[in-house]
Length: 203
Image 1 (cartoon, one colour):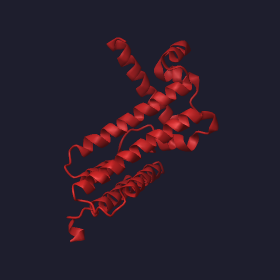
Image 2 (cartoon, rainbow, N blue to C red):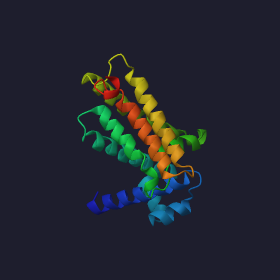
Image 3 (cartoon, rainbow, N blue to C red):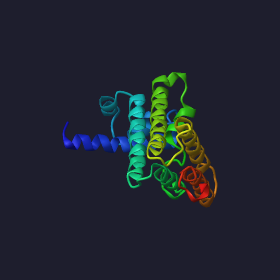
Image 4 (cartoon, rainbow, N blue to C red):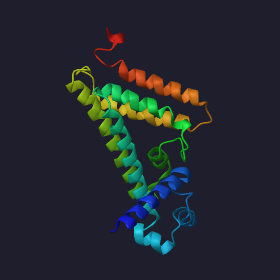
């Protein structure tokens, strides 16, 4: 595949991502897709197979972006716990950004999809599980470094963090003040920081 073709596919995925993220799977028509991607139906089917195929690739692309952002932030912190706290704090800025939706696309899709979209629903479940596993691994890394009590359950901590982030993003979708979202993100971040064995609050 030529570099131009790869670029065009990437651009198409970015446009599809924004469209599905804003409208959801069911409300997005083929006409919407044609207009957003500036492609004819035949070209769309040739490139992605179907609306469902395009949607699943958009989900994958969204998840890759999210993981890349998580790793970028964690790589700037020697402490996994401080890195996770920093990641949550930047999520508090979600209402400050021009996004198709303040809610997580994966969570929106999880709530929307049904038995007729079983393959896409399984994709969402897998991508959420991958993110959960990444959180769990960072808590385990903190235990290996001696900054997190080894008696704590890293799996439970990772799942709780994912649930808190899902709730934070859903809350941000409401007609609420940006400061309220920042404050909630700060509360979640602080709850991670106080887990550190050398944190002043534990002394």
